[in-house]
Length: 315
Picture 1 (tube, one colour):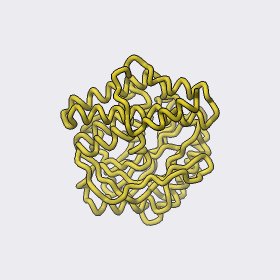
Picture 2 (cartoon, rainbow, N blue to C red):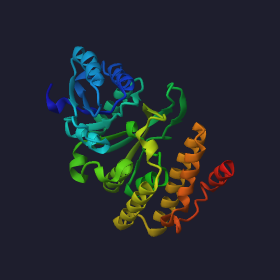
Picture 3 (cartoon, rainbow, N blue to C red):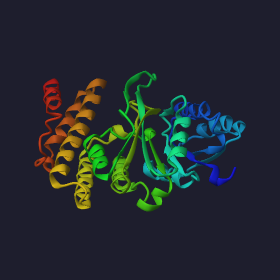
Picture 4 (cartoon, helix red, strand yellow):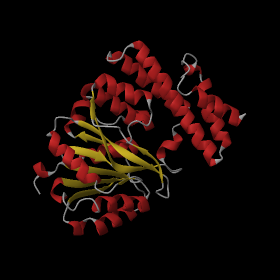
């Protein structure tokens, strides 16, 4: 297969979840009948064991598709593992599919059609996703209403006022963009994705597409469950300071986005802990609002009702 034939690299940064990794791989297999010549599968495996390697060697060789597998020893860490999977890719566009997520039926076909039709006019594309639980029951369908292009200002407002606007298995990015803006920042932990979206959208905007291509799994073993702490809040505030210096949004826009984003972020973590019955962690989460660094944070009218409701539930 020639490199120029590869339109899409599906990059899987794996980590100690072999059963879900196999589900992710099989979801690709069920998608590629008409597009074998246009895709490749890249696996960057940070796992401590070799189960994922055995699964990849069982599933991929008989398919006659382009793929690469690497087992990282020692492990790279979360953001570095994302970067490694992208740096191994050869496709014109990249989709990072975490090992706990999976493609929906015809997901690859939908992506290839959009790439082919747009002829690289839009370097960043956001598709819909289904948010599912550990049993694959659909919790909600996160769909965009219609096809539209958001220029940098509107795209930034969207991503900075809604912490779940972009989910990893829904965003497809032209690979050369990473050479322009850099790779995921390993120093800022679990918000490295938001930092990346800011860097990319501030330059290229975002093409929004109504079709769902993948499922995003919500579960207690997610690496993001450990991110509700003071360090993350300070890193988020640092990102908003960077946004202000871009001079794409005015001060009032940045402040409103910051208030909405941080409220949603803290309240979402609090709600997850309450749902799990972990009221101690839930109280710790909601008490992040009392951090000195948030003393000047404006109240979010959008989220005030939920903040009051959760406070009451934890009283």
